[in-house]
Amino acid sequence: MIGSRWALVAMGIPAIAVLIGVPIISGSTYTVWGAPVVFVWLFAWLPLTTLCLWVSWHCFERKSYQELEGEDK
Image (cartoon, rainbow, N blue to C red):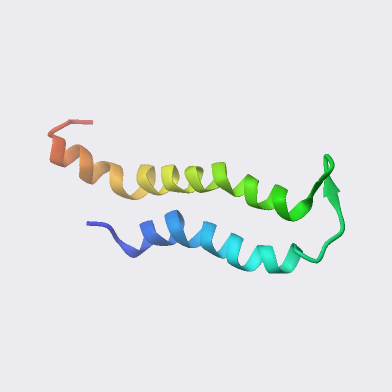
């Protein structure tokens, strides 16, 4: 069963990072490699969200799926 730990890691961390991080850094005039830091922040969270999904699956749900599939490990 999908628990609250899975949802917190997979969806909570990226949502908080974008919903809270963007308003905080949106007024910044800094640039990273010529791009505004807010764009770099948003684009950085695309692969980081995938990483959060992988970590949550690997830590919390992988064993459940292996049991359903009948894999022994």
